[in-house]
Length: 420
Image 1 (cartoon, helix red, strand yellow):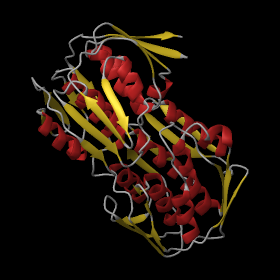
Image 2 (tube, one colour; image 1 turned 30 degrees about the horizontal axis):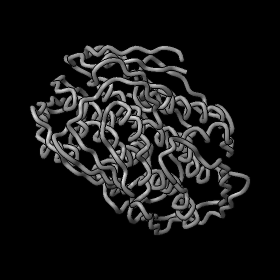
Image 3 (cartoon, helix red, strand yellow; image 1 turned 30 degrees about the vertical axis):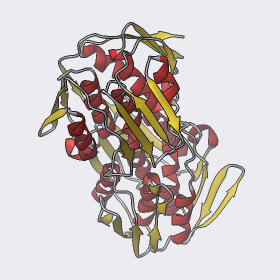
Image 4 (cartoon, helix red, strand yellow; image 1 turned 60 degrees about the vertical axis):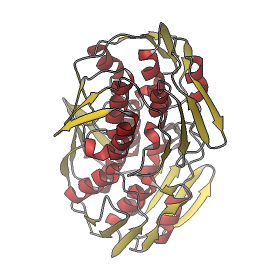
């Protein structure tokens, strides 16, 4: 197992290129199960989670190979309807094979998923959706077993206690592409990753409208064909580097970023005194001399992303005052508080909120990453902290940030990996 060692306080300059979106890639990969024809995907990030999904698709019967910077997915035989525990338990995105397997094969047996420990994330909306399309579903021995000779279009409401389900929307949308008739998803997730998936499915011959809004309409078709598709840039990686530039008071150039997807972040940064200059697919941050405190609440898109909550908390440790963070999407996603405090931050949790008393100097210390985005927050804090920071369990980081240590080294950071 690797650990990352950072010598803080080094100036960051130059430019960084944002990789393809992890959260778009995983359901897009799952959607390749819907066709027997060849799929070519470009701008696929080389991540642990991507490799996990590739291994799962291979186990299900797909042939997959890298050709330089593109991924080629082919079919050479029968696809298995069973996604077993060993594959699915390590990554929640694996649940996305449920809808494609069910609608393509008429049956699916998918292990209940795993992933980061950031709170309860039930699959009830996934099950509700495929049942509405006519599937018979049983939960047994840790597996979701679903059967349907042919799914039938229906109206599906996907609102949950914490808002729409992104993966639930993806699953039902994929299942509906080959269903008989029209499916309408109400209270659908509006995330750009859902738009990416819908655009990819349409390239394969699906008939989907309304993606990016709360009402998605799918007209079922009999067959989907091959496609050549480029994955969009990762808005969370982009947002992480924007927040890092603000925190490190650096104005390095961020390339291949769609800043229009980060308007909630932009609105907050303007209020804390940080200006961001966006030009086409490039962004440059104009750091603030004094960072003002600003309280936020995370919401589903287009609200402030829960996946940037930990990174924003790291920034607020440098603010001149008190700020409060409330996470309505994952109310228990605060395991990084204790580790940021080890670096000298003053943060306490009260019920479903974190209260940050900013303005305290951070100093290096040994810390442990609890999940993917917490890892990024600890790296950010380590880069500005005085002295040496050691971050253990960085395998979380490799699940969602492609070559982040190499990208940071190119910016001038003093960062290296070692075996624990």
